[in-house]
Amino acid sequence: MNSQRRRVLAAGIAAAGVAFGAVVGVPVVLEFVTADVVMGFNAPDFNVRADIIPGQVARVRLVPDKTGTFVFLCDIFCGDGHEGMSGQIHVAA
Ligand SMILES: [Cu+2]
Image (tube, rainbow, N blue to C red; front, side, top):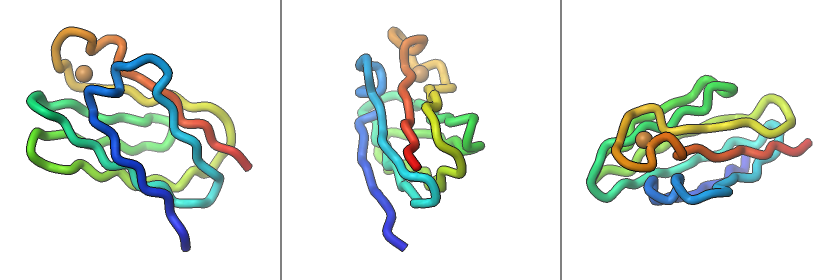
């Protein structure tokens, strides 16, 4: 089965409007890298999370099982801007 693969600099999550598009039933692999601080990716609607550790690629695989717009966020306090570290996953049919 095809899957989408995206790589994101975790600090970029802080930028407003970060969003991923996905399709129901199509696996998505998100890859996160961070320059210097530990961060956490959490998409509670899909029950997936990962620590994002400097020097490593954090991979999160999810298979969207519902359509809609869902929030993801950083769940490890990582410094200034942490509170704004969130984005959206748009899942289409
Ligand atoms: Cu954070």
